[in-house]
View 1 (cartoon, rainbow, N blue to C red):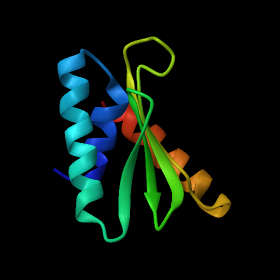
View 2: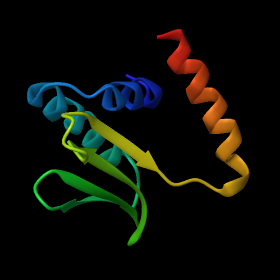
View 3: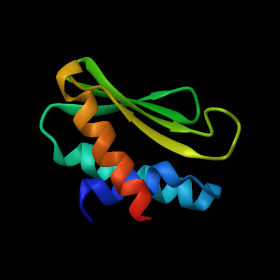
Length: 93
């Protein structure tokens, strides 16, 4: 499964069984990257870090809506490109 598919799955949220499965997918991706770790924050969230610097979060039921989310930092110059690609991808689904 490619990273785009995982991001789409994580974004879609759902039942706790689905969230646990999505968390496993995110952790598998993190494990495949050099010098990257997932640090638990509380009982549900993960801080995604590379060499001690946070680059994203896995959020589980962050707003009490039962959804899971994957928030990733990016360089300012890439924000518009990523937004347009994600928006197009969401319209396809």
